[in-house]
Image 1 (cartoon, rainbow, N blue to C red):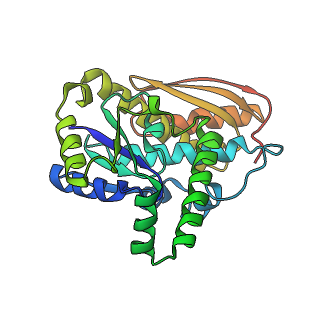
Image 2: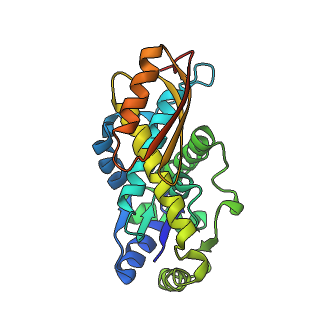
Length: 270
């Protein structure tokens, strides 16, 4: 079993590939919208996530706490949805949410401008000029948001295991290629990858719990997990908040031990 993440430009055919691949594999197929729905269980609303991923942020007035909260909760939602080890996700750079987990097939689907223009005109009933404008706008936003949230160029081929060009290969052939790749040893979970997955899941759960609790939500924290042992570092506003951080983390299901290395210092800028 493998987790498959498919990154695609606007109307590049990635959604169709994801849906057909999930059908052939018998895996759940998850879109960005479904991921946002799942994230609500961690205490953030879809409206808040849409705002975070759609507004023009100012680099002169950064909001590291808000950005970290959004990404960590999306990671927790993705991990929760893929906990059975089988998932096909299509959307915004999903593989970047699961950094450190090896049993992921990272796919990028591309297509030429004419392919995308035809898709936009047929699926969205746009004129040619409208289709071009929409594709260019959304491509520009994707590049910006990947740089802002992940500090990467999401078009960098080194971020992917395979790139499929739908100008050169049909959807059925692309799906069959990916189906065969999911059977390869490189994308099959082993003990080390499962441990990494579980540790990342628990770290995300602890961070989400700390972010939801009114006593600890403003602390500037980093959470790492190794075999159920949680290490928390960063700064809090007072000794009482440091104590509360320990209590909230220890109460999270799956935590065996908490190493609290949080000091008293500044809060996040929200």
